[in-house]
Image (cartoon, rainbow, N blue to C red; front, side):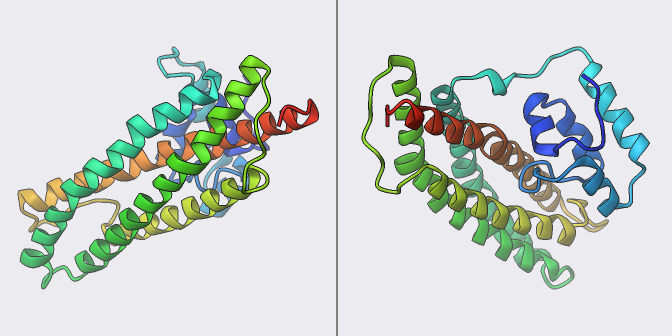
Amino acid sequence: MEINQHQIIGELVAHDYRTASVFKKYGIDFCCQGNRTISDAVEKKKLVTKAVLRDLQLAVEAKDTTTDFNSWPLDLLTDYIEKKHHRYVEAKSLEIKPYLNKICSVHGERHPELFEIQQQFNASVGELAAHMKKEEFILFPFIRKLAKASQENVSIDAPSFGTIQNPIAMMNQEHETEGDRFRKIETLSNNYTPPDDACNTYRVTFALLHEFEQDLHLHIHLENNILFPKSIELEKELLASHVV
C-alpha cells in the first residue's frame, strides 16, 4: 500500500491501525479529527510532509501484529467495544477520581492546574457514562439488528429515530467534545509529564490519565472510522432491498 498526503487520516487508520502510532508520535488526532487529509493535518502542525509519509509507509510495511478490526462483523465489533472499552471507562473512572482528589489536596496550592485537570476529567467521565448508555440501549442494539437482518435476510422495523445517521451524528458530536476535553488535559499536564516535585501518587495519576486518553482514542476510532460508517452503509443497503 502506497501512502500519499491526500489520504483521509481516519480511513487510513481504519485500513491499517499500525499507522495510529505514527499519528500519535506527531500529535495528530486520528479519531475525533480523522476526517482530514494527511496534508491538512501536517500543514496545521507545521510538520515535514516527507517525514510523516515515510514513517507511515514504514508502519504499514512492518510485520503485521495488529488486530484487523476493519474485517470484523458489526455485531462482534459492538460487543467488543462494550466489553473492552465501555468497561474500561467505568472501571478506570472510579480508580482515577480518588487519585485526582488526593493530588489536588496535597499539590494543588503549588500546581493549581490540577484543579482544572480534575474538573475536565470529572466532566468527561460524567458525559461518557451517559454517552455509553445511549450506545448500549439504543444505537448498538439497532446495529445488531441490522447485522442479523443482513445475515439472515429478514426484515426489521424502522427505528423510532428515523435513520441510523441521526444517533450517529449525536455520538460523533459527543466524541468531539470529549476529544477537546482531553486535549485540554494533555496541555494542562504538559503532555502528562509530572513536575520535579511530584510524589509517586502524582506520577501514577498522570500515567493513568495518559492511558485513559489512549484507550479513549482507540475507542472513538473504532466507532467513528469503522463501526459508524459501515452501519450507515449497511442500513442503506437494507433499505434499498426493502429489508428495513
